[in-house]
Amino acid sequence: MQFKLTGCKWLSPDGVRDDPLYIDNRTGRIIERNPKAHDIRLEGVMLLPGLINAHDHLELNHFPRTKYRDVYPNAHVWGEDVSARLGEEPFKSLQAYPLWERCLIGGLKNILSGVTTAVHHNPYHRPLHKNWFPLDVLKNYGWAHSLHFDTPEHIKKAHRDSAPHPFMMHLAEGTDESAQAEFKQLEALGLVDERLVIIHSVGLTEADTKTAIDRGASLVWCPSTNDYLLDATVNVQQWYEARRLMLGSDSRLTADGDLLDELRAAHATGQLPADALWHLISDFPAQCLGLQDVGTLAVGNRANIIGIPLTDDPFETLVNLQRSDLLFVMRRGRVVICDPELDFPQDGYSPVKLDGRAKMMVARLVKRLKRMSLEEPGLSLI
Image (cartoon, rainbow, N blue to C red; front, side):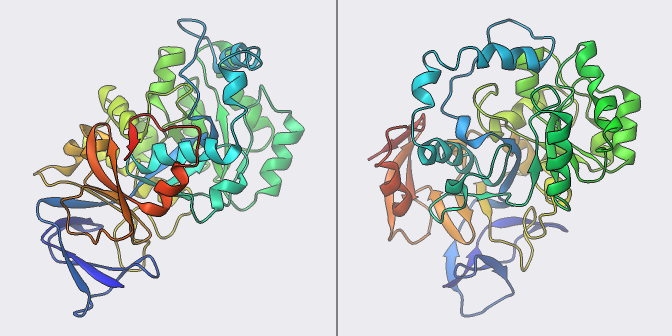
């Protein structure tokens, strides 16, 4: 079916428009004008591209937020603290759930917050590419955890084997000398290049930052994790000016919650205004990660779209939005969840509640959720 979204405004690469936006939900793409398309009226709605989350560990979002010290000098110490307790509760039981359930909780966390594309920092688990998984997950990438938990040989091989795709790893995640030394170690391995996506990097010096940017590397900023573990975060201005900056939610093991929570945390730092932060979850990650058809609403791109209340400033609205305030989330031309009052066809949808607010969710997903033992906090199946 082809349909047009009318009565709303939408953010194009050239600015805000109020003409209809045309969708083909068979191909999942935005299309050229078609006068025969079915009309869906969306008064009082602003359409934005589905959000891009540049860093998550999708199978860890059922874990509680955890630390054992007020402030850590670096994340390696935190990692060792947690690793030493994985055989204890609650981690022992939480690790025993089926992988598909653990991954799906991460998928739900993201799609319910308007994320339609996510970057998973761990192996590309089989559930992530099943047709029932609710969002798009970056498929072509290389990764290592960090210099502390991986050997130089492993990191070099992972980098080499993943060419020409993005290669991501945690780096300089701390405020002590150990964290500050990591960039030079990675540079000595010959891995600071245009494929490199570094995560956290609170310990980078100004000189290291300049070198990384000059060589085309990108940074994923996760301010709520940084604040929780390190009581510090990275200075992102140079990265933003180079258009090499992305925002990542991290997992609930260390972060505030979802990408909307992370957007608020980033805004609270005062480093970038709301309209600048928008680029960190849309066109910048699309560019840095080689995603050619997401991040903007343009003909030929995936119809990954969110609807938010129409205001004079959509960016300020977004940084103050709770996930239940999202009017709808569409992935590849098909609505995943929406307010029941909207003009979308409701055949094939089931009622749910999200943080106490009535919603309609695609029935195939609800059916799978009813098979799970794990539950997404705040989501009630009716």
